Length: 268
Image 1 (cartoon, rainbow, N blue to C red):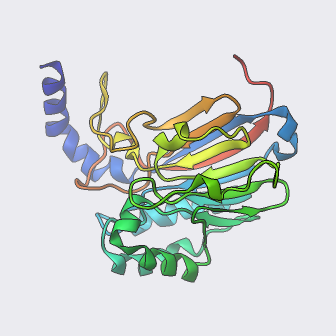
Image 2 (image 1 turned 120 degrees about the horizontal axis):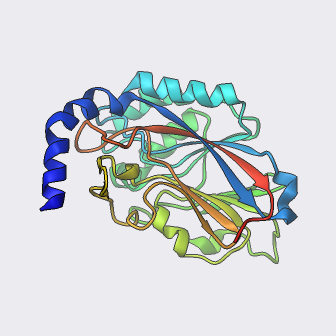
Image 3 (image 1 turned 60 degrees about the horizontal axis):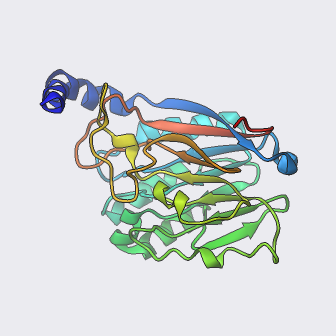
């Protein structure tokens, strides 16, 4: 009953605010991720993260332009786009690509696909990313010298295969991993993965004060939003940029994330 009263309150005064104001009120999250001292050569590495644009579903060009501007102003080393570029309309990828091709990063711009990208037809997303000059990682990694950047296919819509990541005997370097669904953080044991970048949850999109996210998706129920830690690894889950199903957010603003790696002893 308590939950019913809370959601009723959100549904009246909250829906207008969430639909007209909060869903376009971009918030920049500045996040520091502790990494093991043995990887101190990556201290200060800056990463921009965008996820869940769902550009065909109440897409907002101004919001995406704003997010790209924020990342470019920070002069990040790399950008990860964590999937779900659209919900189901491939035609929306072309105008989105015209915006995302302006992303700038010292090392490069990388992407993984979300479940909706797979369901829509993966070939459309592959072509769109190639035209935009964005490197798509499909169950693979790229050696960037000091570390590996890796990406897995969507665990819900694709066929992820962690065995495609080089073994430690082949490449003993730290890994930054993109994987759309955050609950996959529990699916592997590889202490080289110092940071997993995910989206998928939208942070719940509608959150009730005192209760939290109202609805979280499959493979996004344990890790809803923000920074999580496991042994020497980190997981960051973006609330995403777009919305799905309903054109509103409440207590869960869209975000662009700027992460900085920091080599230090993590407190127990």
